[in-house]
Structures are given as C-alpha cells and as structure tokens.
Length: 256
Image (tube, rainbow, N blue to C red; front, side, top):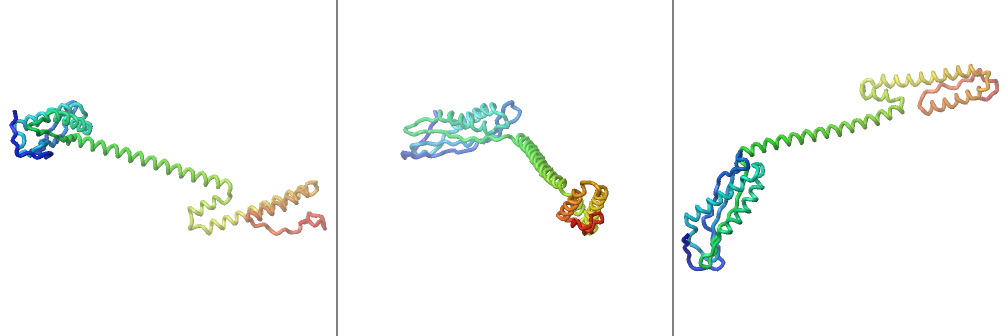
C-alpha cells in the first residue's frame, strides 16, 4: 500500500503534485508508422493540503499503464488520422484514471492526464507532399475553368460581331481600320470611291432598263423605281448624281 503523508486539513483544497510530461511513440495501425505522443500527467489531492505527492512505486505504475493503454488504442487507428486516435486515447485515459481515484482519511487522491497524438515526421512529410499535389490539381482545375469561361466570352463576342457584320456593308472597312490604323486615309478614300462606283452602277443599270422598256407598259413603273432608288441611296449616304432631263420622257410629261 502506498504511504501518503498529510498535514492539517483544509476543506475543499486541491493540490496538484508531480505534474510531468511523458513523451513516447505509439505504433499506428499496421505497425509501419508511429504516432508521436505527449501526455501531461498530474496527480492531485482534494480535501487536505498534502506535503508530498505519490511515491515512486505509484508514479511508475501509473505512467506504465498510461503508455500501455495509449499504445493499445493507437494501434487501432490509421497513421494519417491522428485526431481520431487522440480523441479515443483521452477518453480511455479519463476512464482508466478515474478508477484509480481513492479516498484516504476524507481525502480524494486522483490522477488526470491529457494526451496529444501527432503523426510522425515521416508521415507529416507524406501528408505535406500530398497536400501540395492536391493544391496543384486545384490550381490546374481553376485555371482550366477560367480559360473555358474566357473562351466562351470570346466566342459570344465574335458571334455578336459576325451577326452585325452580316447587316453592314461597312464591316470590312471597319476591320481594316482596326488592323491598319496608319492607313486610315487610304481605306476611307477607297470606301467613298466604292460608294460612288456603286451609285453610278445603279444609275447606269436603271438607264438601260428605261431604254429597254421605253415602248412598254412598264415605263411608268421604271420611272417610279428610279425615284425610289434615289431616295434609298440618299438615306444610305451614297452620292447620287443630279437628275438630268431624260430625253426619253415625252415633252411636257412633268416627270422628275
């Protein structure tokens, strides 16, 4: 039986004695890797002020049991899941040490422990390498997603551009101006010349139509078409030649 000395009683007093740390390794499941374990072990007396802590025999006994219980529990857990091992170790140690509590002359003598379980350095390095690889994968996925979103934005922009280009005869000049801003004078001059050529072509074609139908019933339709064509060209900003008296029109017809 352990001998414990005491002094004058002090009701409700709790004195912690021989608080110390135990550091050791405990095998993980499979016995390939170890956990690094640190246990803070404390003894206390409740009810009196004690002048001494537990004797060497009791201390050695408790420390040996703490190591044995911790190693047995650690073997149940993966070396990569130290948090689960730590949780169970502390639960079992609390239960085990509570059964060692005893009363001696109205004094409660008890042990408490708090364990920290960490992966070994070798396992920590493996976990660091794995975390780096996962981070690299996450970065690559994020970059691929960003590129896909950018490509989609570019595609939609080009679709809008091409849809507008189909409705505008000026698109090719606008694109050339964007690509060759230093040649803007030549491009604009070419555009204006092209517009005048187009207008002249329309007028020439209309004159030929009038000549070919001057004796037909559709002559009035052609004359009306010429007026409509001139109005459309004016609205489009094309240069329209002045309307000369048409020698084909009957004298005094009053047609424009």
